[in-house]
Image 1 (cartoon, one colour):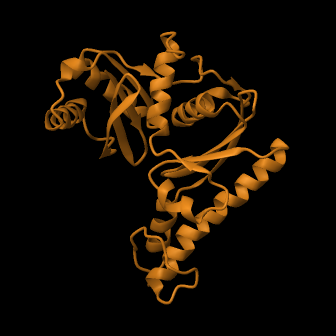
Image 2 (cartoon, rainbow, N blue to C red; image 1 turned 45 degrees about the vertical axis):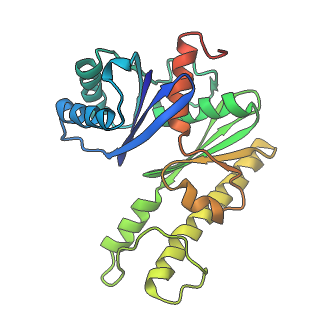
Image 3 (cartoon, helix red, strand yellow; image 1 turned 30 degrees about the horizontal axis):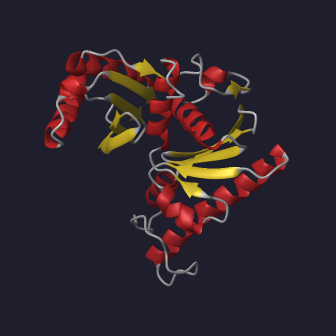
Length: 259
């Protein structure tokens, strides 16, 4: 089994691949102060709950946008699974031509998303990741990673609204019934959810203008399923795209991407 780990700013999302079937995924809060042993205890406890022996893990792949946690998880996988993880970076063969000015600046999660999406659809793509940050990746029909856009995530916007105002409350993320909110809570939800759908649609439209063609738009990330129904441009939601990208890049590195 392949253990795939996506280390994000807010959450660590992980799962197991038996061939191409994902078991999980599971999610825990990201904590830069937590040592390798503590993460290991949580991983092993989840495997025990799921009836999976740690010895069944034969390989590990990870992507990380939290540099300080990368060695922590390397220590954890070595201690718990006796494996050295394959870490996603722009130096590896992703199946894409990276036309970013400095490919080393591309987030590992964005690389995993783009590689998995292009492998799946083989067409011009815009990948929207609605997580801590809202990111957009533009990929041409020839598999060229051009770049994209990065905006503050929905959670960051909501927290800023709550912390920087005296009277606006913190609200749960829920789809509003109407755009015209009839109370403060629904007004904030409308501004956040429908407002971010508008942000997505505008950036997708402008990216397509620069691509010179329509692109297939796929969304991922923890908030994708919330925003997608309000978007006019998102065509498919793949909540586990980053983990799928890790599995694809692992297969490709081992020369098994056609298996």
